[in-house]
Image (cartoon, rainbow, N blue to C red; front, side, top):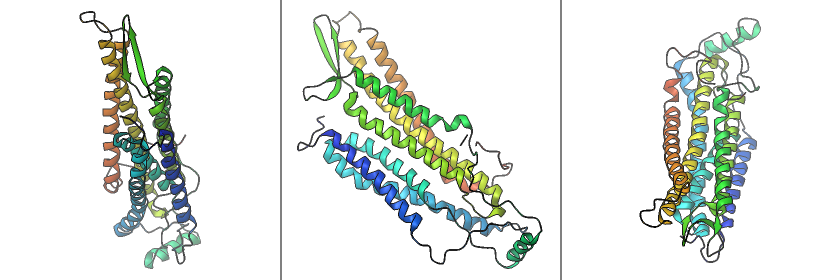
Length: 346
């Protein structure tokens, strides 16, 4: 499909990426700096009284506001950028693929930039217990601004490793690609004695925008992980154990989401590159001569690996969604103590 519409070049798809980044930064900056008149002050000292289930529910509900805001912002960015990207690219499929990655990155940026949650001071008997604790009695550990390790070191590097592998694959396809009749590097010419077959290929034409999406996804994933590690989700120090588990589950879901999105992109690109290459290698030789090797084997291997990566990515995305939707139940599950979950910063 021709990726020109009314003379607008493909490289102007960089405009939606810039819009997504600037919008995420502007909205999150406004949320951070808008005066919060009358906002409840955060609890900085612990209480000897255990929090009630209602208090825990209120704290968890406040923590979910950040998640909801990120999802709403991602959906809004997708809808805002979809029509311009289709007009600039001339194809719905590629515009949809780019927009999904840009919208997900914008949502993660929003999540990482929103101000920390705040909790109202305890009331009644809880207030008295808190005052007693402040006067010299036992005190629960308060929230800290120092980043905490909340995910396994190996799990934390997986999104970055996937992004680097994806970019390396796209660079390889770009170097192997040739220009088509329109001068766009998105084809691979397979030649054999007496014949030449043209295969559709990612090349630089599709590869460069996908590289930018990979960088955006990986960067926004790590920004969200740093935000989870550096600020409590449940700032009431009496809920330190719940907060630890909440952040462990959130970090695991974030890693799975970022990794799943990158693997899905990687798998789709490898599948769409390998299939046409294998078909071209098979068509470049006379009947009965067998496909052109090793190009045919490389195409089949790329398509097979791409399908496996895409399936793995979808599974990770489903697991991330499941963890996010069941987090309130999971943090209260028996047998989970602080530190029992996977843990995301070195």
